[in-house]
Length: 233
Image (tube, rainbow, N blue to C red; front, top):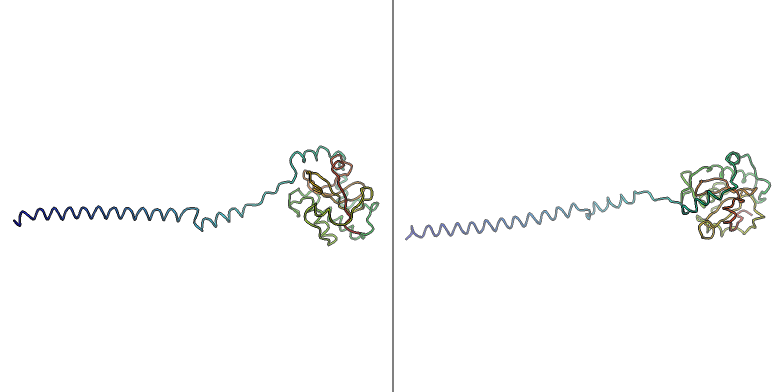
């Protein structure tokens, strides 16, 4: 009887061994899958390390500096600036060849006017950059703000609209050196500003030409002229 039962016990042990082997393989498979999931989640972009890199990457992207003006308005500016001073005249003014004492503001001392002219000339040719106020690029209000700050120690607001609220109102026929003159170039009040020099000329940061000198008699500016303010009295 022992010899007959032995095969059955051996067969039972074999079946139990097979059962446990299969179960162990399934457990190992589940563990492997779980570990793989953890590895994939840990390496995904949602991990803190990757999120910080994405944040740094996005913050490192330089801001886009585009003109406030549409391309159509820039084209109109170029097309309608029919009274623009000659390049030689602009260069002469920038070098101090004109003192503009005919329409001098008596409240601005000669030394201060000279300082203003140096600041006005210093940035001639600097390209237009919306939001800029340095030699790397300037917009119109950044230009007037910088000139007044560096020459007279007067702090003007950053936007042309806010600058149009400073000082006192001046009639077009009564303009003097250093007055701020404002234009509606975008459909909004006082959207552009320049510094009056004299002889119907003013310095400003033009969207199409950068910092330059233009004439108040130009068709573009005649149609868009809005008001003027005197800062120094």
